[in-house]
Image 1: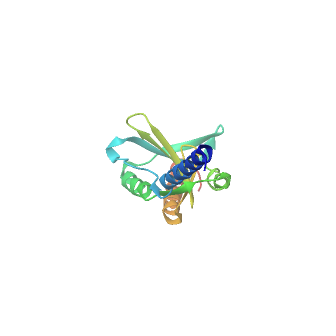
Image 2 (image 1 turned 60 degrees about the vertical axis):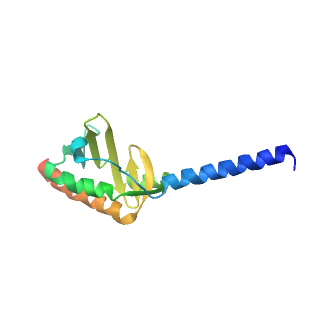
Length: 151
């Protein structure tokens, strides 16, 4: 073999290996890592209601924060989502908005087995995404009643 063929083979092997490493980094990883309760400034949730074409969010009660954090930490990313993911998750702007004390903001929504985190779609496991979506539904119903809406 000449040097060009050997170089080409090495480059191809390098890019295949690099693709595999990147792929493994995207598969089966926690969606929310290292979020501690004391780092959170506030959490709000969407009540599936709009005023002046803007979604209405209410503050999540402090007593619900531990449950939300547990549900968030159970979410594992299985891969990048597709345009199809947006059909499931895109109807709701974001279920939750977490404001961190350092100024960062995390916005996310779940529709099993899909997640939308800060505008990016991901594939997830079904059960944890479903549990998070169910928690949001319960909060949204409570919030709509608190806001004076019928259901």
